[in-house]
Image 1 (cartoon, rainbow, N blue to C red):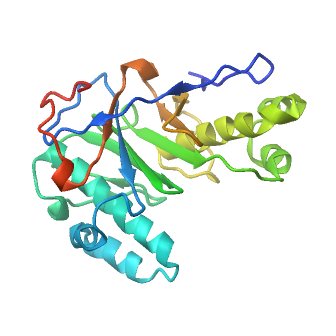
Image 2: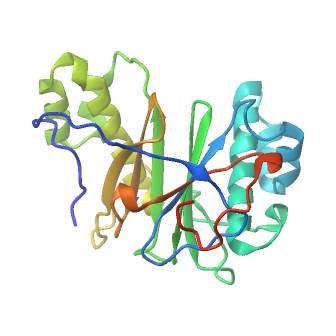
Length: 258
């Protein structure tokens, strides 16, 4: 299965914009569905002391080693948010959730818990979590999101990191379209690499299937991508906003769009 990308040679059509609903306190995900969650990692997010209290020892130690305060605060809120989200599927306290880690460091739930695949990405003041049912190669999911900002090296990075036809298409596009095309291709590359946990600089195993990759817009100024072997169209995703405790709704217990 090949990666689905917009062809930069064709007229650019904007990726679909995500419409967020309030996240339910208890939620299940069907085997053929994808849930996407949004976490605020700046001052609009959860109280920092409350977030820090949710982290496990490994995450807390990493946070304590961070010297750059804004980056540290975003990390704490993102990973506390991940735990809060997973707790709504597992029906257990966020702090008690245990993780195991793949060879390249991708976290997963232990085999003796609910069969869920998930992935976290952070950029700017935003973090996103993709959640799917199941475990194993066919169920693994990867998500990436980038804050779209001007950069002067997109052609050089594209030539070094992207497939030759994609890099050539970006170079051939009108200058005003290159930045968006680059970020679409880059987020697709990252999500693909995160789906199986190999990372950007490790080759795909020769017998592995390429996932389907879809781009979308979480909000103005950002471009995201999700990768999975089977992936519903963006309009069929359930997209939830993780809100501070005081704003939590009861929501829909079956995981459908509220």
